[in-house]
Image (cartoon, rainbow, N blue to C red; front, side):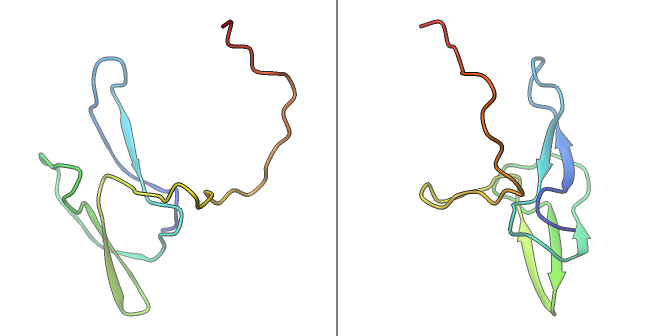
Length: 86
């Protein structure tokens, strides 16, 4: 698995019934363990990946530093201006 792969989904609310849980962009490895279905909080591990004999647990939340840009394949130029009506 690599960063951005979907590892599960949770019920959020009636407006967003399926909230997908994804791996962080820098994650990669082979699936060693998947936790069974149940009630979890965002700090509890839901999957364990193994890469080069090292294991790493991933939770349902991601933390990314503000000053570090997210990795992208391509940055597309704007075609039309964003109008907010304000």
